[in-house]
Image 1 (tube, helix red, strand yellow):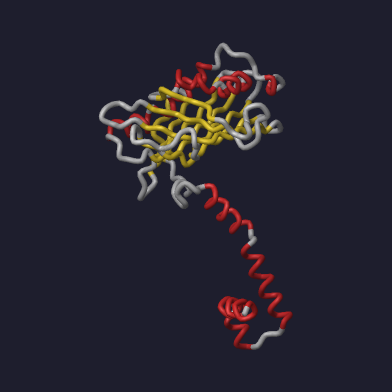
Image 2: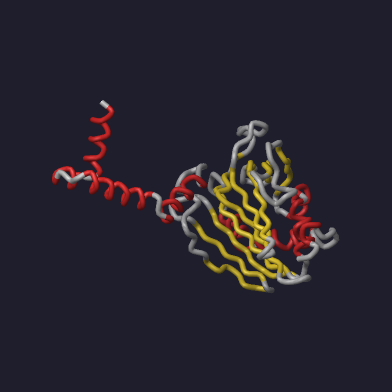
Length: 261
């Protein structure tokens, strides 16, 4: 029975070879070629993208066509709308006169985000098996965030996993966020559970007193937003978020992992 099933699958994959009565060696070559295609870098990258977008497969992982919204005062703001989706993509990039070690210390202070992320009114670190905070690697922290949105928009919340990685050779910090679930914070009717497809922060040391900052986020608010709110997010949110983050690092100590960066 197993041989019949396997034979049927083989005939479906290689009907030409089956009709021609190909030898065993030809079959082996054909199967090897098929395996090579399935394991090719392009196919593996595609499968990895599908796995990483497990919240809603195929949404939020397509390549982005960025549109420059503003280029002022050394800060560049980009935005993009994903066709056929309510998700919004935002990006900001700049260079600041600050040591990356201070920025990293401020970045790891989760509660300080309440001071510099607009609308954020609650943040909580949820229990996990592993943490990325100390070593700059691992499965990451899980965070709950609640946003007090202006009327008439209903409040939003997210549960996200944060992973932080340090690249000592390139003198970079790379942090990424993506929506996840956690039993301590089930979905309720009080707020709307938004989806974070991907948020990233990249800090790159440019010397003892300069750091490049790249901030990017792709989020589905799960519902339409007023045009004024969309306009604010597209133009002001990346600049305001990065500026607030940099200000929070002014009076903190250099992180021990970056004293020689």
